[in-house]
Length: 436
Ligand SMILES: *[C@@H]1O[C@H](CO)[C@@H](O)[C@H](O)[C@H]1NC(C)=O
Ligand SMILES: *[C@@H]1O[C@H](CO)[C@@H](O)[C@H](O)[C@H]1NC(C)=O
Image (tube, rainbow, N blue to C red; front, side, top):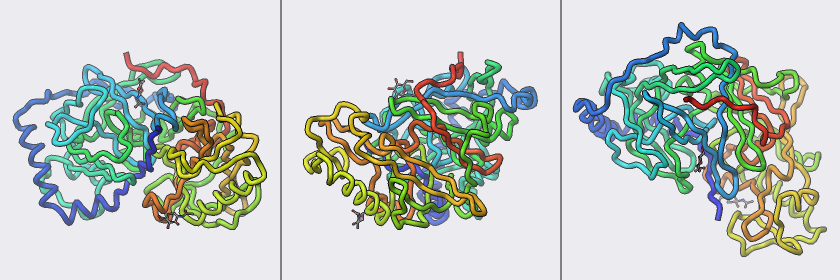
């Protein structure tokens, strides 16, 4: 059976208030880290690349191949090379949260199984008053240990990571020039993780959110790439992730402004839901784009509207609800088992989310049947849009991986725009993103 990953949207607001209110818990865990570092187990490393040398790299994108799928794997991962010498780590690319962190031997209080040996941190600590540290906490945070930056991130699926920020070298090749870049970035050494229910077998999370700690915004502030990222997920599995703004033709992209009201997440603001081109009566849906979520989540009312439209559509067709299929809440069986999503797409209609793009212009994010349905292992077709209210997302509607398939989705933090374009994502631009 497949795994379902509820959004990786970080609930940083909750996290920050914990940092203030439960300081005893917080400082006790941070002192365990201090103790370890003072024993000097981890080697000190010094940066090899100074940012001033590579300022001319702006505009040169970096491309990372993605592995995984929505179903049955339930997550994607990309390889990041970290440390000196560079070692590979499999990370979950998450546009719903900012911080990149690795399960870490600090030593680890609580780690889940990892595909690689636990990350050994450098002793190069980010100090508590560093702006990157500040960006992970709410306004008036305490610095009980001024020489280190404690963090805690909690995700919408209940998983969390607690640790300390270190600086280390990440290595990759720029896409066009093929040059190896080795900037130093701040990342989390996570020594106490509570796994979410799906818990993919990975080394950590690649934080791609809007905040200052996000890896793209760190690379951008060093002049290495524009503060733009995007991904292209294929319905055949895999795809690619990129940093920088020179892999697409901006004039072919549908752009809509990021909402200023929801500044923590990549949100186009509120949308109206259309099914088969017609209004469903669902308006003002607050939406977030979240690559850390495998499925799409609508709050109860919109979920109800969409599922009843889909059911109505199917009532005239040879489909019956497969109540015995536990894969997802809504599955249907046909006359004979389906092998491929393309066996069923003609029976379903697309839905769309319509945004106000300023003034009277509207943009539409269209979701074809192959981007909201999966074929279960029993050969039934199941709806990959789930009840977000049930998942604890309250009024947040999350566009997850399933609905971003076969599109290049772009998060332009320079211009505060979100963009998309239909694309065959199974053929990535020829990648030279691996470090040697
Ligand atoms: C992560 O990607 C690697 C290939 O780089 C693959 O071998 C591995 O199975 C993937 N892990 C998961 C959990 O998808
Ligand atoms: C969605 O979940 C909520 C909370 O569990 C529940 O009250 C509601 O009835 C569900 N909506 C639908 C349409 O199933």
